[in-house]
Length: 464
Image 1 (spheres, one colour):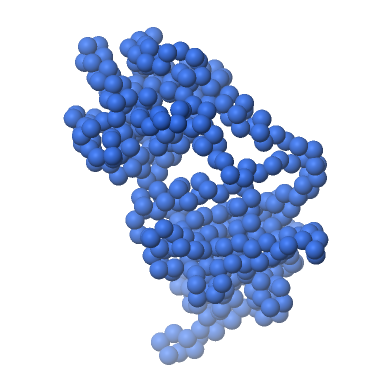
Image 2 (cartoon, rainbow, N blue to C red):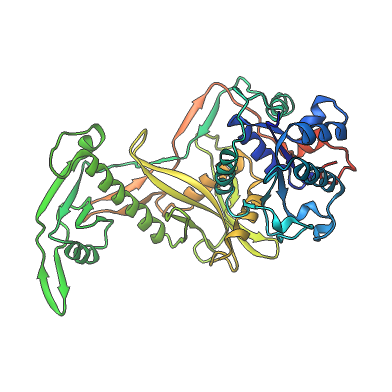
């Protein structure tokens, strides 16, 4: 029965992608075969490969990259890859299997790496692995490839458990954990929603005020009870009066309230989050951070040489002894010969479990320390390469350093939000104590251990 997805790839160069896609296909119920699984089973390598392709493979998923050719040059496939493709082509022709070979295109390799490769239907993964996965799943479903696994019994998972976790076990010790929730320290008791006759009026009033204001259509949301309603239009001073003004308490926002008219509780939540977004953006820009728009239209912020003279930020961990050496982290620096790398954060307003922001970490690259690269494929590739070197400890410390770098001379992180008030964020993200912990890996990545476990030192050909 042809019920197996056979993954052909260059080893060890494309191990990371192969492990990623194999594990996800298994989790979805597909039966997956990769050479690492064959080795674990103790079978003779080529006998196993021949048997799987000849008798069981429903699709040959070729991890298509420059790495499948010797010296990354088109025309000469690595021996192992070549054997697998030749056998697959023969079986496809003999049994008339349509689209038996599917190239998963993961880099900028040309479509004609080998004879006939430009005639195959490539699925693009090079810019977005998730999008490529979505297209692959549609193809597998269209071609009626069966899902045969009721529960995942992955040799990849077995390896991870036996080879990685045994050296990084959970241990009994009291340990402090940091979250990505960054809370407000002094939330005002109320906020206000101003409803204007039309969007044009709301825009004019918004422009006349320099405090954080959320705007959705003709509604402005602010912590200021009496915003400036006097605007100038065509040389004339005009006083714009809102149609409605609503005061929403923090208690009502958090615990809910009943209303059949605007604003409902859901309206209040949405407009408050818009206001919170503006607070965050104004705070970052007040600190003269640069920003970059993400694919989801949100903004992420990063330090540049003009706003952080020294890329090294020094701080003490919370609850640490005064005798303990301070921690120093770099938030941007030289990246190869291509420019600079930058640690960045984006933030999503959160009302639960904490009132504040849910932080996400990012890596950006700039040509000159300021302007980000324009080539999305290039960014995607180098982001993975750079980020692969970071474990949890590295990400944690960069996040902590980023926040510490925002403090003013009083050690505060805040912004004026009304004529009488400032709102501050806490100096640390939310933290939790636990009675268990683990030892962070020091010099080995799981990918490195995988290579050692499955491959001989002189084994550098794809498929062998």
